[in-house]
Length: 374
Image (tube, rainbow, N blue to C red):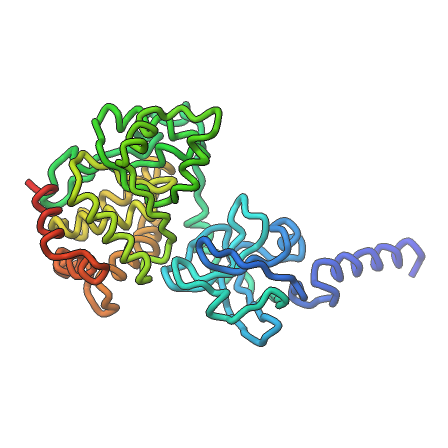
């Protein structure tokens, strides 16, 4: 063997050592990562950037295992670049814009507390199997732009529409992206649309008063109609997380719909994108007012048409994956019964029970239904 060939082999071996975490031919492993608590949605940041994590040889759709220094272990977790697991299922997520890779339970309880993690803990992540979850990763890896010119109308760009499934009146409840948080460049468009619709009460699922006051204090804040409603006390900030199955989420949902029962509409329900938290609340209202399973699906999936152009015709596989993995678990959690057939169940009765368990009174539920239905 000449020196040139030997050098080439040595360089190849060094590359394998780098990718495989220090062991030639071994699966990717990254060890002794510091941990940080992410309390807003509940989970554990691993002190490594997404790019650095992927540079170790991990790929979206892989199955990985995570072991914390206290011995708590999660095996066969999907590694995604979005929250693609069903409600209550764990994952490792590299969400675009996150400072670190995160381990959490999707729309579930805080993994930091479940795993009894302390600030001094560390974590090790290793490959369990290649591409186990690649099909779901590919189906759910969808993106939208924040440029108005990429959309056919202000309404589509703002994800703005009336909610009128079941026996609901039209133009009494509206849903949209945020009219105050402009991180996606949509707030001013939503603001103009709710002014045109004469919205009088806003249920803000995403923010607390501190966040809203921060938006209002920005020199570039240009949502005058929202500002006026907020000054009048007609904005209810609920700061809801994504844990649809939690008692806290149920309590805040009941609080929001109680406010609707006690105020005059038209109403706006929104979160940041007007997608998941808004989708749950609108599903809850629609179910309460007699909407069928299919009507709820039809309304929820308009969001995916607005943002991504995904319909049952244009991209049926992705459409079905989203319904089955995102919306169906929401509806199932509404029933509180894993055995319930959500396609045939009396969703109105389940919605009423959900609100009663969240603290809403029967008289308030009746007043809300009277206000929203024909």
